[in-house]
Length: 328
Image 1 (cartoon, helix red, strand yellow):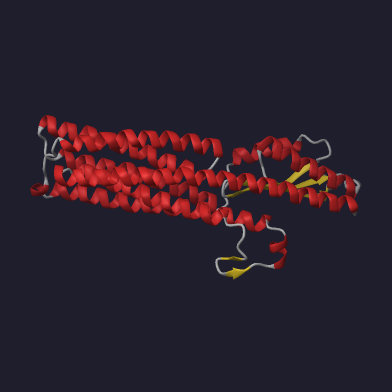
Image 2 (tube, rainbow, N blue to C red):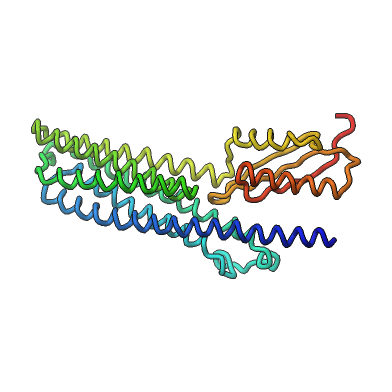
């Protein structure tokens, strides 16, 4: 009994350390996202102004795309804020059960899901903006009177946007890999698509000016909208799979192989990994010798949990031990 109590105390202390590390990562991710908001505000404002005085539909589409970046970053910030709120005594207005208040691991893992929820909403916003941009581009092609050749000043806005977006993409990607943060990974994908659309905008405006083609601006805005649409669909798809409790079967296969190497494990009856925001948890049912001592099976589960944390960075592994079928 004393061994169990010591183990529970050790696990609680270990969880507090893991939670503190994850919260620190989220705090750093917030700083990076605030940088995104500032950069998007500056460049979208410049592009909107230059698109008006320079008569460029493509630059306006790129400005809308960067405006979507502000919305995306704000949504991701909201999700991270909820995930970091460890001192509340309710969840979405509902009181917490007593056992959760005493042991906050399950609740905190639930909070981490909110980051993924807001990442999903970011994808929806990007898709909606892409549809609007593509519609405006098609409209300009259908109605010739709305076609114009942009002014040279618009090249300045597109060039500035390209440079800033490439810098933001590099910073987001570096921070996302270092912190293993899904929100920053989504932001990196978003900023890379923004850089590509700014490059397309720059090329389209330069082409329209060089060859005096009035329809090129509308075509380029459709292409820009297509980039936004693809990025939004990708973010939406990955977030949806995460929330639907999908996990890569190849990764689960690696987990299974690692556990199966223990000589006491006769068979793995079931194994399922779960995402909780950026953190991975694992549920596994193993079959062992029916005559194994309870204490030995308990220690085997602890060794497996330690191995999965060390080898695959899985924060919690729930091992259920059942007796193996003598006939198997």
